[in-house]
Length: 138
Image 1 (tube, helix red, strand yellow):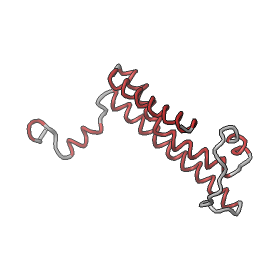
Image 2: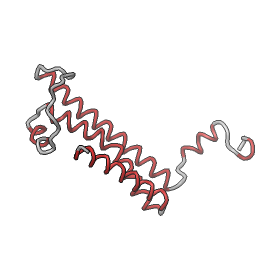
Image 3: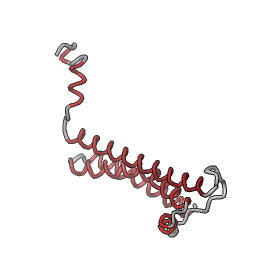
Image 4: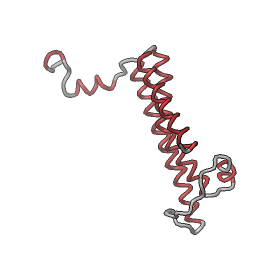
């Protein structure tokens, strides 16, 4: 180690940062992969919806979009209706942060980090309350 006070410097620091330092690093990498996959899927689904709108001769900036109806979503997607893909993509975008918090909660519980698990559970509670308020329309 050529850095001051025992700290690595230059390429030593880079090599040291690449090595896993424990379960937290593995959890962080797993969550990063989850987020990357979720974002790619969300964008792909939204892209399919926009492409279907264009093929149908409609503008992607159209303002007369049907209201969100979870019951219609599977049928709209199976029938290749653009609205189904746009709503599904938007749901995926909205669900991505919550899935990150849920994955963190599971990881913290597995590693025994109770304090962080409580914080993650509290965040999930706030997200759930926000969704409930949005659905109820309070």
